[in-house]
Image 1: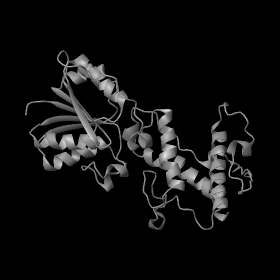
Image 2: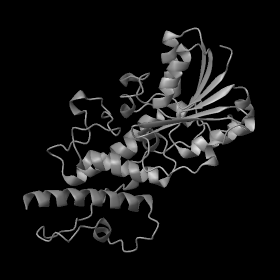
Image 3: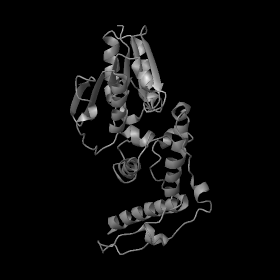
Image 4: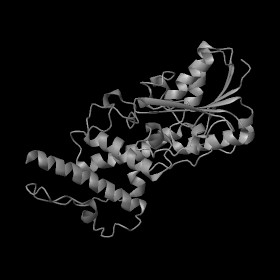
Length: 317
């Protein structure tokens, strides 16, 4: 009851551990998490509800715990554990640190802080249906980094939608979320689903193409929604951006003010080996060039249009 515990991460493992700590008699708990709640978290992160989507995991988890253990002290930090405020002196105040993180970089950082502060670390994680937990005590056990760890082949949705920090996060976002939403199963939800600006209940899925929209209009509307409106929604959570650079919403009207429409490539659908190319269609010949935002936008819109045209031609063939 007198122990002071630090919980790093309030996701799948963090929710379970916070509940268990609170019900086991621990009365002084700090929790750190930089993520906000996504729809895809709700199936297993049981402290959260649909109404919490977009809010801080750390703060909502704290409020949920206090509903059934109102007399304990829980302090929540909506922040990155790598922020300067969480230094060695901060870690020294705790009797034990529990990790519920989802990436190697943050795990290594916490491990090094615990070694420097001489605080025991309980490290846990999951891979598919398997779970693992290890205890690390300076001078008595090997540390978390003493054994090499495999490079992850998948990334948490929270990271790639809310707090991307590497180029690969953006690639996974495009492949597994945007591409799947546009060309995959229309009935499958993912975390790109955000209501339209007017809040219209008749248009819950903005990725559905209107019957009166041509491909140019459809592509530009999706562009504005994903890179403009969704960013505005993310910016509404002011606390998320206290210690991080705020992203800038991007709209077609600003990137391509003249709404340039390039003519798509044409091909014979009987030739299965001939593929459309957005670069060729736009006259871009050097793939090593660093494109401007406008050039990137033109390539994206052109690829979007060519892909839909190709699919429609294949269906007709």
